[in-house]
Image (cartoon, rainbow, N blue to C red; front, side):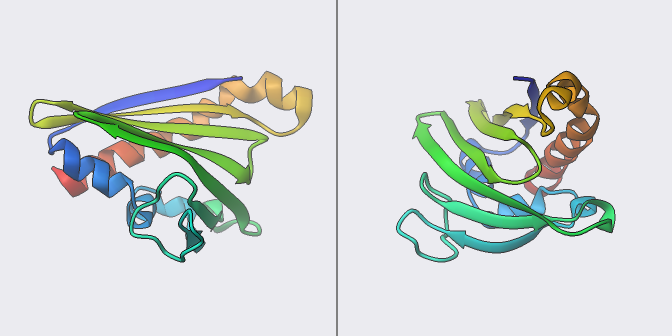
Length: 159
């Protein structure tokens, strides 16, 4: 399965960066405008609507309409893991429904003095069976601008 990774140093305290990324608000703020994201519903692990923190067991139902073209595409994410230790943390979401055949995104955070290192690790598979497997490595053409935006925006909002 193809893998995409990207890291950024954010000149902001670990706790602030971690908390920001742990919310529905953070997800919307870090999604490029050209994706036209809409959060249709978010549920915590106990089914509560619009949780303050996206804990393991949370589900986010969103939809995107890239560049405003075509019908909206569902993107339903399950938060399958979330752990924090002293100076590091991560959470992982998997795509339950959406444009990829498979999607697993691990968001990693490391304290480095007064800064925070944010690392995204994505394992994905494009749809269309064998054609998708062959074209998978080319998806970086779409992933790279999206993650560059996410990291630039993180720095703008938190530094």
